[in-house]
Image 1 (cartoon, rainbow over the protein chains, first blue to last red):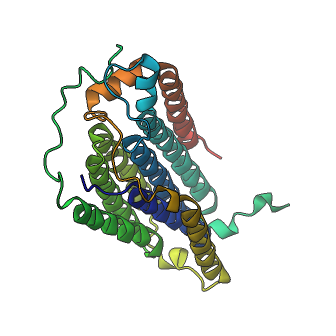
Image 2: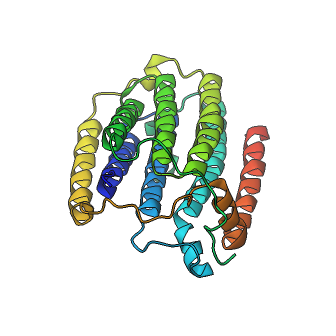
Length: 116
Length: 184
């Protein structure tokens, strides 16, 4: 079977993660920075699922309960990452709205109140 | 419960069996990479958001090629259906189309960020990928990503994290309503 190698999925995930990192560093709009964070979370999800498919010790039907659970662990992590991302986006966009109401300007470089 | 996968009876993913799997993945991956770059490169926030929607759709397709059907469906429903709608709502509410707000200055941050990203990519790729080059054989059982198996695992072995996440989501709902209602 000539499938896609695991390294291809990992390289794609790595590329998306690094694009997200670069976007967080170079962009100034907080909305776009949030989108880049979503990009990074999705890259991690892709890596989790790739490892879940290409797991190194194959789980056959009839194995013990623990092994069956560990075979599903990657997908479970993806579900939890998605839930955390949803909560994070709701709260983060609420914060952005609140700041926008307060200052009428959401340039991330001008939010330096914590600078000291 | 002993045989988690015995009751799966999930139909095997017909289609890209032996030939055409790699070109299909390459097309999807190229589209995903292009749209990921578009998220960062576009100056207009709406265009960035639409690129992200495309990226999420393509990722859902890649999840399907990984035989994780449930995750692909969840990706479409949660990310493109809920999260991106929220993003677009906020972009429209904030009226971010004022170009002065989104125009990046020609500051050294761009070059530094790109260099940093490329260096990190090279470092991590050199560390991780060479050892895994020979791994082409999927180890997972057929139907490991079907809704039956995902739901069964979620409600048996992973039920405590599941409940914790539900509490987190409830707190997120309450917190975002509080943030939206409060007068600062």
